[in-house]
Amino acid sequence: MLRSLFAGISGLRVNQTALDVTGNNIANASTVGFKSSGFVFQDTLSQMLTAGSSASTASGGTNAVQIGLGVQLAATNGNFTQGSAQTTGRGTDLIIMGDGMFVTRKGTEDLYTRAGSFNFDNTGTLVNPAGQRVQGYALDATGNPTGGLIDVTLSTANAQPAVPAGVSMTSYAFGPDGTLSGTFSDGQTRSLCRVAMANFVNPMGLERASDTSFRATANSGTPTLGTAGIGGMGKMAAGEVEMSNVDLAAEFTNLIIAQRGFEASSKVITTSDQILDDLVNIKR
Image (tube, rainbow, N blue to C red; front, side, top):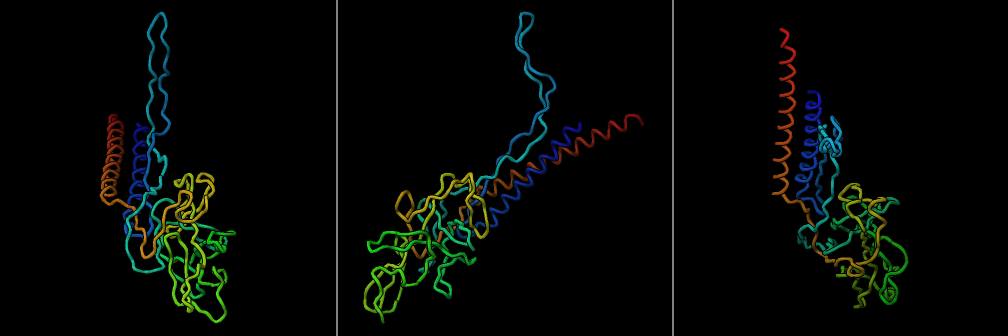
């Protein structure tokens, strides 16, 4: 009888977790760049009542008699499918169409995100709403990325070709390859830098950090860095952001399933309690 009580308790726990995961997905249905999560259950260790045996000359084989001891959470899996695009009209908002993630820097730590809602701060550095600095590459004279990751800024120090003295930048724009270009007072357009992208062998192995950002783990593998449209990376566009990939219809279905599972597990507990009460009352 105690087995059924503890099995019911385990059912309450995992279905509560399912409600937590589903509730978080629904809450972030309108969050830019949010990636939904799913859950997987598995049974716990079963108790062996009678071991199985093989056939002999005297009798046939028998199967093992086992009783399950409940359920447990096996995994929560991230869903990295592409979310829908939403036009913002802001030139600093970026979207990746295809594989890849933006690289942002928080202090000395690199984080990864699909949320492309960016703006330039008072120093001319491209940042996300949490203040994380968007990373990119300087460009050489031929327009190819060079060196390691740098902050994406409006600085003309790395402009190609070089900016003559007395010439100022009048406007800027991002291209489909992530290149930040400036238009200058001499009528020339110069490349300033290019937004970096990262890809992972196992993106589901990424660890959620904060602000729709992720950090690399041993199971995600080290990031493959590059730029838009090269080496399997998706293309980039300005003036749009990727919205949440939450499927509300599926989430509400999961909500109902988890609710029913919770109710059923509660019924197992109350039924077991009633039977125990009947056993106690037999002596009366």
